Image 1 (cartoon, rainbow over the protein chains, first blue to last red):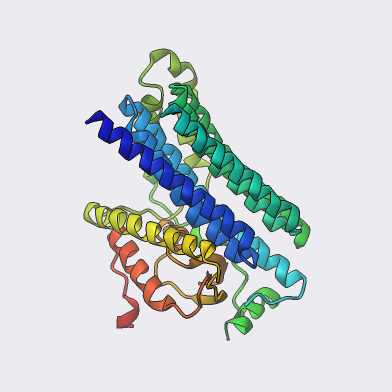
Image 2: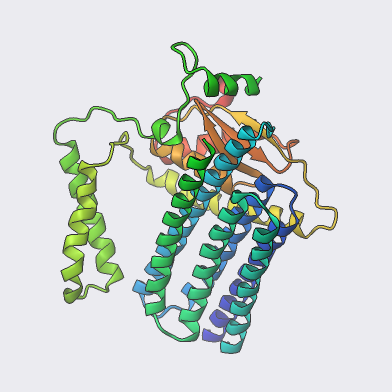
Length: 102
Length: 86
Length: 199
């Protein structure tokens, strides 16, 4: 049984890493700022969630699980808010440069 | 398992480095902000994995602080950059 | 059409024209509160922060040297910060929302990952606007943040009462997706908001 949990944990962590790589690939390949933000907020967000879940599965105490959940929550809120702020900023720069983004 | 986790952590580190390429290529401040966000998220993920490798829950506290600071940093970054625009 | 509306909002802040509204103003309306309300919120925050501190430090007593001042200061912020309208969460709505949110955020990440890895990179990006019916405060903040984690959408800007959404593929049905999201958030907060279809 512990072996099974270790295996699931390892699989979740690997899947998380794949999403981080997807996020970076999107960051490098996507054509404009806004599309890159999609890659960053969504793919990296899920990547972290999967890694956090994988680590939490093998945690030794409830305190650890709570801390991991708290970390995930902070990062998820920060990344959604941050994505919005960066997009708003980019649109303001677009307008200042005379480009209408839509 | 430990070697496996080291490999994943290295992979995440490499993805941060690749993100740096975007900063170097993307001339706009928005790309630099995104790099800050990528650093924050990936650093937290790496810290979570390290806490398991080293079996030290204290690293989780470091990750909590990192997660909070990353949010504040990003907001400050955007606010300061926005002042220059308008 | 959205373009003109946005430009008037940006350039002519007159009496009749919509004034430029920042996200913080839109979501943090300072509503008058009954006298005891701030103290009640202070008490709620105090208990919540104390619990979080307790779990974080595994209820160690010596951690309270830092904990008590930190908790008091944190809870005292309710006297300094502008007061957002109050809200409550419906338990059933919360469970539904959490499950739905988990599925949607996985879908969103898988979708963007597929586009990133695909050699052809199928993107048809563009902006659309959407006027939510949700009230200001926590429900709207929740709405704005969740848009970003749904497949293919990103909340890019708040202009007046509209949200400017960036889409990876503008052919997707934005009205339907965001209408569904609004209904879920209304259920989460136990609100009775008219849905898009009924108006």
